[in-house]
Length: 210
Image 1 (cartoon, helix red, strand yellow):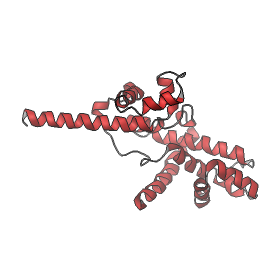
Image 2 (cartoon, rainbow, N blue to C red):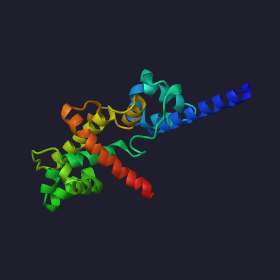
Image 3 (cartoon, one colour):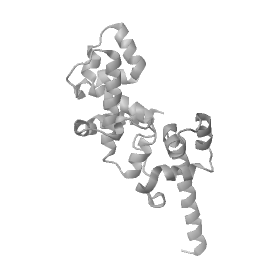
């Protein structure tokens, strides 16, 4: 390979890596930048910094930290096919608590639940009752919604433990600091594979229709 061809390939790789880092930085939850830079920075300042094409690659490298060597990282397809992690977590959590969801029959309770978790997650639970994990009923819709979000994020975090460091971090960075995805329990690790398999299949079907 000639020196000019080698230089061209190097420049192309550098440009591709920078583009991926910019894309990553643009998708990061603002709370991550606040902790990285200064918690006292105003939201508008954080947005300006996050949207700066010049700063994005460096900010992304700082967020990735020492766990990922950006230059040699294998940028696979996004584990969630580009979808929001919270959406995936709510779908997984709705399956986890599908039995309780189906036992909510009053219009008021259903309205409260759907407002908090979304119509998609509610319908997903109805279709996947056979995958339910939790057996203890939760009758209060607000408590149920909070538990759906908690267990769903924990399952997402457990599932990501099987992914590469880069894939795991690039999903977690799109979530606010402090979700259950950062500290899943053994019960979530046991169920995460099956639940997230169905979630990703659902997301993939949607992507195929687009």
